[in-house]
Length: 382
Image (cartoon, rainbow, N blue to C red; front, side, top):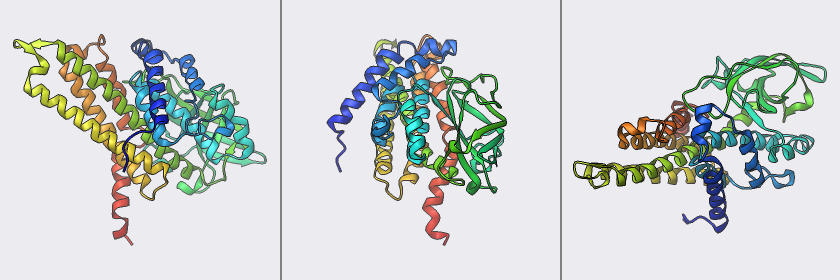
């Protein structure tokens, strides 16, 4: 067991940290306040290879692994949680096309996605199906060489701005085996978007309903075979869960650093806060919990890279544990700031708002427990 990062991984981590420090952190508060989607800055990340992190290099990707991606998103989220999360979503879409698309589809789309000439959104959740994703209702009826789409997707990051939408649709029977994956380009007749949702956090990226009304697309826009879409979605979510956990971890890293700095400056009862034993214990617990979260997350990423049989279980474990721990640490950091932590002059209240959703999306943490328990108990259900 070697817990040391390689020289390449350390270089990747430092590159992402510099981008976060120089391009994200100075603007994060303003983007949040103005509900501004910094698409120009997001596209700059493509110049660093961050738009196709684990996409193959023959189509412009960086060809890195899932542990590398975790290191990147942990670093990026210290600059801006919301923006880092959107870059993760784009990467999931790019990877899905690279992994499951035909050679022609890969050649057409992946170079544009890895350069961010084209920006992608992922469309799985619907107004009536969130955790029960296999119950989705959006239909794609085949008519000759076209599919006709009808339905709606909800809570879609980048809706109305992104150039292409990776959409899970029902092409067959009820349940997971009737689901396929298709690409819908912005501007396609019958594609429309709802109003930008007013959200607690993630305010620097638009979130809206995506509507399909007799929306016609070529059959050639299908990713893989009919009926394989749900499998693709779940495989994509293994990595997506690691990325969003990394975003929680990175934000919590930043929150702990802010708490350490603040408690070293603020005085109460005649001495600095970090000289109060109760608060020393709190800081020690926060640091310890983050180290435990990091170890579990890195191990899960290693397992996914190495395709171990228990990789999905560990991705679910990591997503649940790291996002819960990250939220708790950020919330504790706000508490250590007292009333100042509640003010937007400090980053803590934004951090709390941004990481809260990580316990819901990419599979709610309750569903992560379902996945883990099902895997633990499968030998008893024969």
